[in-house]
Structure formats: C-alpha cells, structure tokens
Amino acid sequence: MAETIHIGRKISRIRELRGMKQDALAAQLGISQQAISKLEQSENVEDETLEKVAKILNVSPEAIKNFSEEAVFNNINTFHDNSSLNDYSSLLNYQCTFNPIDKIVELYERLLKSEQEKVELLKNSK
Image 1 (tube, rainbow, N blue to C red):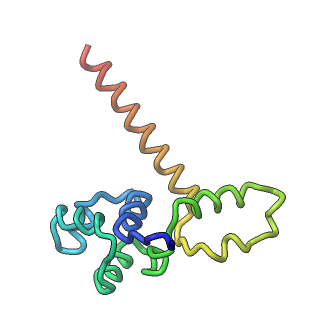
Image 2: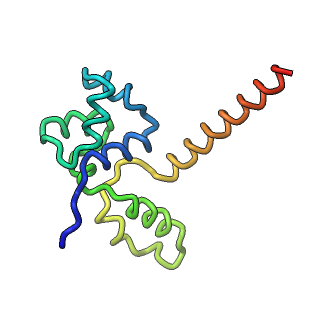
C-alpha cells in the first residue's frame, strides 16, 4: 500500500523550519490564521493554493510535495559522513531549497535567546 502524501503537514513543517508562524503566512495569503490551521490539517491542497503557499515559503510546489523529515536528516548525515562526500545521489532526490543546518542553528539561537530573556526576567523579579 502506497504511503499517503499529506500536503498540509508538509506545509506546516516547512513553515516551521522557515521560522514562520501561522498568522504570518495567513497575512501574506490574505486569509485567517484559522484557515491556515485548516489548510495544514488537509491531506490535499488545491494546486493554485499550493503555488501561492510555495511562493511565500520560497520553495517550489514540488519541494513541498516531495518534502520529508527523513530526507532532511539523511541530507545532514550524508553531508557530515566523510565516506560519502563523493556520493551526491541522495541529494539529487531531495529538492529542499534551504540549508537544514542553517535552520537548526537558527532554532538553537532563538531558543538560547528565549532562555536568556527568561533568566533576565527572573533576575529582575527578585
């Protein structure tokens, strides 16, 4: 049995990796945050809507359709595995238009900043 492609979930993960909130995507599409939530719960998305979302997320509609978490981690592992530096075949099947390592660093930096802000708030509340 073929695995079901859940386009809404893929849109959600790419949006999250881009560091974009639902309301920001909604504003750019001219729809409500609730409509984005419903879109991200949808297994299928109309081609016209998918194209608009892809443009805002700066990826192709095909990249959304072909996106997989496994491919992101395989890409990272392949990049760091010296034994496969000359094997680009795994990268050819993956059409991600952003560097996953940059996104991990970006998420880490945001988490660190958030923790620093919490520490400051706790210091100032004493």
